[in-house]
Length: 506
Image: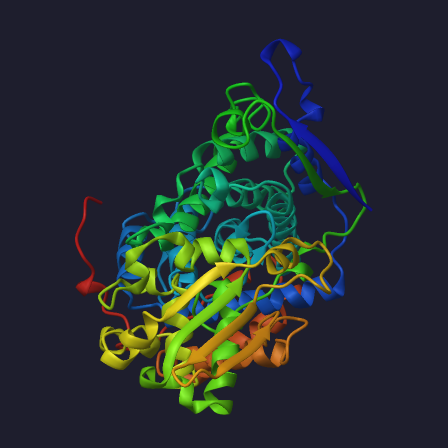
């Protein structure tokens, strides 16, 4: 069963034993050789498909072009055969494959999510773990075990430790989880994983300015950087190098100076020895390319578009009030106090963190598209801007409570909406979870993951390559050592122009 571990800050003279440190307990979970269940294996396959879908759709977006160009200047290293980069055949060093593929997976904000005390996209664990697996010639079963650990650690850290209220970016939970997953993949001992986890955490703590105001392209790079640091941390630890100790609990450590301070107290759940790693089953992916807390609102807006078409015309609407959770109101709602969230010239990265914009466009269009819905000409439409500026959000205590509930049956990421028309009519509706959520109207299963991949790969990948990849990934548990290159996808001829990449230092 899951055991909750009390985590607090210790003064140096208290000399917290290594085995009582959170990083060491994480390492023990990673080193546990427990088998992976069939249900978890199937979900790992789903998420490998999901990541490939969004990575392919991003192949020619500027952050990916730049990251891929950087990676291609770093060839395979002597410790293995190198790793593959999405879209191309070339091999690169594993940490640089983790970098390039991590950016590709993250750019569209379109893969899986877990929300609790903090935010996370646990699928960000896959690129670094897969890159190392390809480099060293691991098997499909090895990769599945590593990914299951990455999800387990990140989800449990997100359940217990809030980063965002201290303005620390959520990838501070990703560095340790990816390092732990790599440790499981490689079968490293507890001490080596412990040092790797500590180094990964130490190098991946950064502020949330990357997700505030005019959101930059670094939003896509941040998790890729964490994955790259996890690979490098594992390499250093394997060479006998050590990390700051205790990294979480020390009086000058992460908790004391970046999080809740010297009086902090957390209860972190982790599996006990021999307990299966099942945290991936608590996570959920996206049907729409937008921040996860916007998923349910897109679905509700689509529904209202069909049922009440009069609300799509700003001439009919006095106001739109969205009542939702604290997180949604303050991060992607009007509570963020970001003027950019209402700006027709805002970047795509900003618009996908603006509930007023997303709800308005989905309401007017009755649909959502990963490119068209963010196009500058779409954001600049006068009737959209007029309606958009009538949308505000407020925190509702009950939706906040449900957001934080540990009961999956009532945990919710939606809210209620009141649309007041100019004739005085008030239209109300609500939604708890997105349609694609396990408890939603149309939960995602293998069929939906495959369809998402086919849809996003269309026109970018040849049909034979689509079928080859899907056949390979569905055989993931049977893939032998050295066969994980089959999980890479090559773009159709002419889709990628490597010569057109921007020049840099490398």
